[in-house]
Length: 306
Image 1 (cartoon, rainbow, N blue to C red):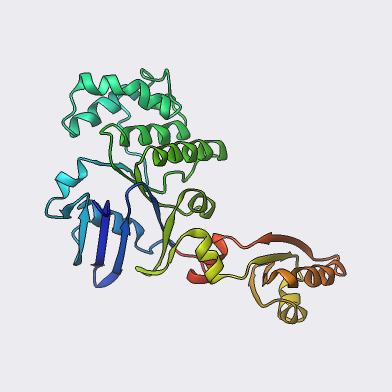
Image 2 (image 1 turned 180 degrees about the vertical axis):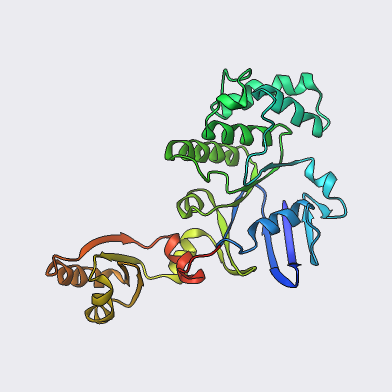
C-alpha cells in the first residue's frame, strides 16, 4: 500500500455554502499528518468524509485501500477514532467501555478482556478497570478514549483535537503515547488548534482556511518558506503607536494585535531592534525564533473565528 489514506478533489457544501473546496492530500504509512485551521475551516467535515460518515459532493477517497464511502464500513475496521468530544458511556465502568466497543469490531469479550491491561497501562490508567466514569478526571476520560480507539489494533488513528481542554501534564502524556504509537508503525491523522502539538508530532501538515489548503509541508519547512526567521514581540500601551511609527524602519514586517506588536526580522536585524527598544522602558520585549503559530496567523489572519 503506497498510501494509508488518499483524498483527491474533496468537496462538501451545506445549504449552498462550500465548507470543503477541493481538498487533496495523502498519508504515507507510519507518518503523522496534521490538519490545521481556524474554526469552520473544514477540518472535521474532512475527517467525517474520510470515514464515510458524511457523503462528499465530489472527490475520490481511498481509506486503507478501500473506496469511501462505497466500502467505508470495511475500511473502518482497521481505523481508530478519537472524536473531538468524548462519547464514553457513563453507565459503564472503564473496562466495560472497552469491552462493549470491542464488540463493534466483532472482537469477543474474552479477547478484549485480554487486551485491556495493556491498553490501560498505555493510557496511564492501570488499575482503573472497575472505576466508574463519574470518578475520572477530564484527562483520564480523554486517555480512556484514546485506549478505546486502540481496541481493534488499528493501522490508522484519526484524532480530532485530542488534547483540547487538558492540562499541560495530560497533554504531554498523550504526546508521549502518540509518539510511541508512531514508533510502532501506526499512522496518525491529527487535527489540532495547538501549534506546538503539531510541531512536535507531525511529519507533514496542511493548513486549511475557508475549506481550502493554503499551505502544506513539514513544520520546519513551512516556517522557513513563509515567515522571517526571528520575532521580537513588543508589549505595552504605546506598542501600537511605536509600531506604526518608528518601528516601520526597524523591522521587515510588523503585525499589531491589541497591545502587542509582532516584529518579524532577519537574524542580523535583531540586535539593532533590541538596542533601540532598550531606550524605551515603557515597552517590554520578548525575542524568540519564528514558529508554526506565526505561519498559521500569517496565512489565516488574526481575526476571531466562530
